[in-house]
Every structure is written in C-alpha cells, then in structure tokens.
Image (cartoon, rainbow, N blue to C red):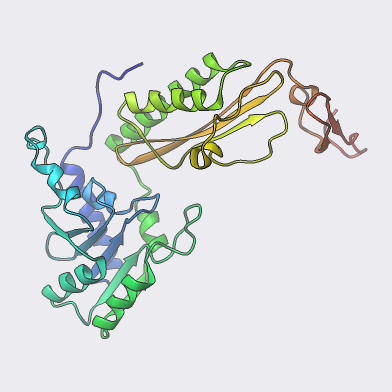
Length: 309
C-alpha cells in the first residue's frame, strides 16, 4: 500500500512536551537541560524540536530553547519555498562546535554556576551504554564552566518521554502498519534463488514509500539453515552479491520502522520448504545441537519432570 493520509503532530504537541520537560526540571531542581541527540539512535533532541539536526537542544526553564547543529545545511533546508508552510518548533538554531555552543548559550542566560541536567551522558540503547558525548566536547564545557554543576539525567528523561498522547500513538501505529506491510512483501517474494539484497531492498522500499525511515541498525537479516547470528547483513558494509535463499533456509528479519520520530520493531521469520523437523515440533525441550543443513536437529529427550510431551 501507499498511505493516502500521513498523520503529523499538531503544534500543540510542542507546548505539551515543553511543559512536561519544565515540570521535570522543576522536580529535579534543574535550571537548564542539555539534550544531546548527535548521531545517537534515540535522537533525544527530536522530542523537543520535532526535527533532528544531529545536535543538541539547550532547554531553559524560562525562555525558548536553543538548537545547536554542526552544519548550516541542517538549517537552510527550511528556506526552500516548499518548506515555508512548515511551523518549526525551535527558531533559535546555531551552527558550530557543540562545546562552544553550549558554553555560549549558558553564559548568555547567566547559568554559569547553575545546576544543569545532561541527557546523553550515559545511555540505555543498544551499543550506547557509555553515552554519546565526546571527550573533547565535554572537556571544553567543563574547563569553561568550572562553577556549573552537571548531573546526568539520561535515564530519568527517557522515562519522562514514555507516556504517549493519542496523537503520538497514531504515529506509532502508522510506523507499525508500514512495517507489517514490509513483512507481507517479504513473505510473498521469499523463495529459492532470490538474493538477500533483493528481499532487503523490497522491505525498505515499502517503508520509504510510506514516508517511514529506519533507525540503526535499520534491518537485521539472517538467511540460511544454520545461521545463529543477529546483525545487519555482512554485504551492507563489505559489499558482495549477498546470500541467496536455498531450499530449507530460514529467512529472518528485524525491521526498525520509524515515522514521526517514533520507532517500532517487527520480527519476521519465513521457513523455506522443505522445513526441517525441529522447526515443526514443540519447543518445550531445548535444542542442544544441530546437524549439517541436510539433516534434522538433534534434541535431548524430555526428562521425567519436563512439562512437554
């Protein structure tokens, strides 16, 4: 399908999110909140800006925020004639090194000795447990704001973002529906002789046609009768023709469909005939080993206490 209507957040969503953030700051005793999006997969800045500039939102308790970005190109896209009807959430966009931009914004507001929360110093996303902020950037901030008190608020703020309005849930459902359509496309095209890259491309094309994108690692895909891995296909970096579906293969995928800043994930698994015996049996007893692709899986027999048959 191609969607006929594309839901977007009303401008009133900005006021709700900003007020929720200011309530959060008041409860935590913060004078300012630095929300680092950068290249992280969660893109926290988008929650306050409704756009991603690969940057930082400096959010104040008393005035509108400042949005820092590393390149003017992220801002100048606003100047196109066909973008002039868009009501952007943050007007004060600044270009330059992030450390310098943070120091300047805080100094302008007289917050050089204030208590400041930081989102992105630590993380809970896959592969980002140690946060997003670079040493060089943060070293500049600390050296130039020696009297400021910084406190990590990454997890607390992420939890504040969790409640969703009906309008936000509409965007979530839209992303999920596009992902379901991508799964149906996979199901219809998977057969022996089809290349993994063709399956990948068809799934992603469905998402993009419906104005969805993907967040890293975009699409995880596994092809083969004995592939225990779970990662983006090897050819997406190294190149090559990609794997080809063979009889008896399992084709599995995890698709990270994202729309309007909301990510959904769907899991897809297609068994290509002939389906191996272990794939058709109950999984109440554990798989302990597998034979080569031409043979059946080997299972331990159920113990006397096993609830399974």
